[in-house]
Length: 507
Image (cartoon, rainbow, N blue to C red; front, side, top):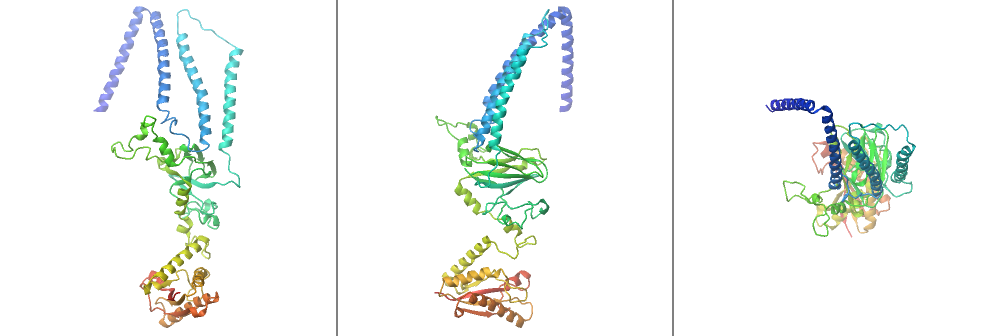
């Protein structure tokens, strides 16, 4: 029904227009076509001047009204050190192009008014005018020269890469449909090597795990950076063209498949400082930017104000597909202390997803972070056992001591935890322990008992071989007689195959 009404309305309007045209035609014949044409010319000329005035006023007023929200003046100061230079270049360019825009619009509509069609009027043909040509060539050339030179200076400063010895935080952002995969260096401050041929479901960035710089790299869900520190962003794409865009920092760089790019910038305002700029009050105590004091949810007046909920963001500035909107990521700029705290909470991707899997090339090696972690865990358990009055708490499992299959020969990695035990006994002269070996129930009980005794003895020999007095240790095998889990599952049997020690005496 609605469509039918719309069609009828269009048909009616068409009929009216046709009838008006016929009436105009008849009127012109009655009054004379020349008089009607002259009147039309005058009307069109006046309309041109009216349109010029309304158009320029609307342009200037709307620019002033929307300057904070659409032109990013007011509270939207650049949040990076280089951003001010880019804003200055944009302002200079806007000034000159604005002057040209106003002059050309005035000239266009004024000429339409001045040279309206009049009876007896003649066109003037100017075939050549050196003066005019010099003016309209020289002035734009001079202006363009200053703009280009200024732009090149800005480009060279903004796009300069870091020097090899410069202190910088380097991170990586890989765009794909439809998200960003972020990578940060760990404690070594270096990003590891990548090879696209190594990309798998468990290795989404194709990191080369044989490169030890990859061991501590981590993949966060957001960009967190410290204020006042230079940042170099490696920018890559995995499928189609994307664009790494941080509007508040005046950072924008294409992410091109097969062609790594980069951008260097230094944040100068934390997220909280930018929020305060948006929510600042004027000298009269009223919000300087009222639109930022509106509630985030118009339907809920008690929801946070817009400036309180503000966050920097990473966006993709290319139309990369139907899920383009999903490329948005939160960016947090924090203090140095907050950044260090955040770093301490991140976990290496290799340690959480690759370590001790079939993709791990370092199964025969422990890294410093693992050694330190295991040492701390052992010392914590020992301290707890020493301070406990409960007899059961005096037993500590040597979780990282293992043996070759069906053998009492210690594996190479067992030495790290046994060295922790040696260090503990050196630091506690009054400490005496009973080393106890256990197995699961696979095989004959007599064999299991013998194997457990041999394994306990291997630990005993290692510790005494490091200089610990033999009188402070005993070694006993219990075979399968003291299980801590069911032997009906492989997980349970693995728990039962263990070596532990009991604190017999402490100083």
